[in-house]
View 1 (cartoon, rainbow, N blue to C red):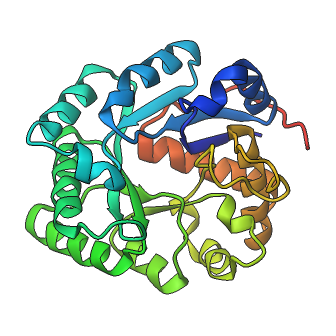
View 2 (spheres, rainbow, N blue to C red; view 1 turned 120 degrees about the vertical axis):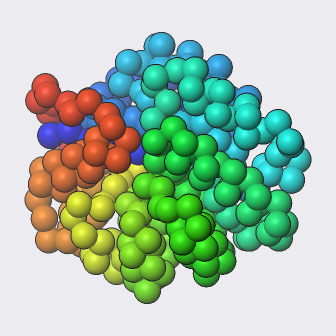
Length: 271
């Protein structure tokens, strides 16, 4: 069985003391590929070094919406474009999007988001979208952009929306990715969303080091091997075998991010 964790941040300081052990655990868990998301372009060199170290790692480049106020400048779009063009291991633009949980600078976030969507369109890359407390303005913005310029493929990452919100973004053409949130006891809306997403639009992720899934909720640091628990929960919710869920989400990740299809069989050690 093979799994792909479609959203990680293993460049964070909490991973540095034992990253080789973390990597061995994700391999033991059957994680054959990882997509490293980007909070800000300054991380790019770190992500390249990690991809040099771990061949199963691909990565994105972009600017997180909560960093737009301090870090988006007139040169940011040009910088992101140049970095994305500089390394063939870049498979997406992002993470980008809208976040009104901790900020309300809509105009700035919209400007940065739209610019990054245009980079993705120009390069033929998918976009990794962060959307928190912003489903309605996000959908309205995307509809306007799609009508004006055409759509861009991508994923709603770490999805926590209701089934109605989920359908909106499915209608806009997006994949939907579920994180450890789907394992939480009180996450009934997210669990209902995980049941309704078409099989060919479904992805799984950890968003590590955040959001450790059940049964690892007491661990402060999430890690890529724990994507197996997300897969197990989504498989249960959809009445699928874990093997079938893993095969479908791996195929979907390869399709969206243009990743090489894994060929070797990898066994999973149950935790």
